[in-house]
Image (cartoon, rainbow, N blue to C red; front, side):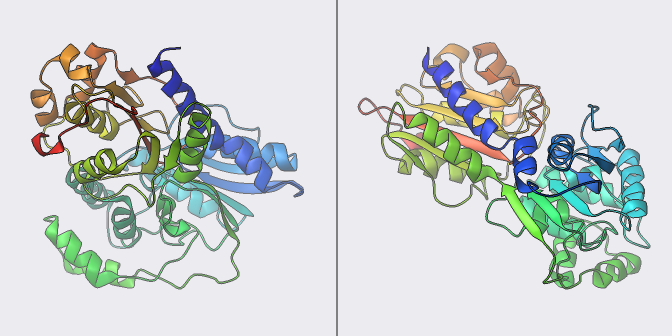
Length: 391
């Protein structure tokens, strides 16, 4: 196999390790049905199938990002993403209606946009505008979901303290951050949220301030919340697969903050062999043509490693990287030689167009899971290394 094919086989091992169906079924082993569930997020359909396999019969509600088959007795609603819209509102209202009947919540990333009911006194237009501005600013997921929980009836425990299984896209953080914690209460932080909203240019009306200050509640210490998998689960599986051919390691911590700083640190600090990392860094979008967080990162990496023997991969584990039409990209020291200067594509956020031309895109289609992003650096044991000061 080519090196690209080898890397793809490693990445597929990572995706298999966070298969929502298998993880959910294993977490519910020994339970019996029938069971009423509320499933929210990009992995919600597969989590429903896992619950169905484990307990034999389920019913309830599945709020997902795409039309797909779900078990009989489960209502499917496709919400809007990445900005909540009317379909998200319909999903949120239905979730509130069903919350008193449900015995289990199944949460995964992406649910913050897919399922929404604005806080009392606020409207969907305001909530959508806040989400849009956070997306454009590259706000990190933990902060974004904290803000969302203060302007929503759903988030921050709005559906009640149901027993909850979580497939997390925010490793190391509280599970209440995932999908903004619709079943997991969190204390309010109104002053911090109001300051942040003001910094985004949102008009802090009396009604908005009242809604934000009303939010927040203490978690139920007896609530059962289990994280069944996250990005580091995928990263460890990629590293284990790669270890059959080379020395491997999993980066400490979670990739976050500015993507370029995180990328430079990862490429410069990693030892020879393969290093795998997971996370969801901030990539602000200005013009925005055809690209996503991972294709933009990969093209930036291609510029850094030009002329070296290094390979770099960036994968959106849900298979949908922004509006790139891909799941990310695998680049190497020859990408820039094949594609020409990447500066214009980086400046206009048109990375996917460039990487499609060079044949470096990863195209998986929807994967059914969602544990944020996986990055991989493969350094040769010898040969030229990148000079990051010129990047």
